[in-house]
Amino acid sequence: MTNAAKHANPTEIKVVVREDLENNLINFFITDDGCGFNNKTVKEIGIEKSTKLGLKGMESRAILLNGNLQIQSDEETGTHIKLVVPVN
Image (cartoon, rainbow, N blue to C red; front, top):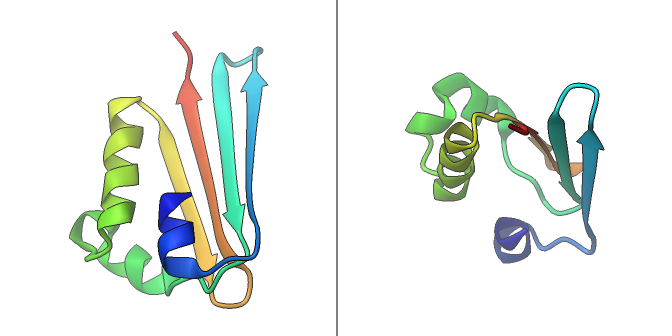
């Protein structure tokens, strides 16, 4: 949310947290309607080589939690982030 507020100039940021008891997971969904970024470029070079430090930080934290991070962004729809974390 900090990255969105700082860089994307959104009018709205939504955060949804859902518990998946059947699969022992917690799903986090974060979306904003801001300016987004070139998701294709980040996918091509990989987050680890990206100059976007916020993305690197999110990926690092997801790895520490044994989670799965998915980021989708474009200039028309903003940024959509899904993080799935196992609950032990």
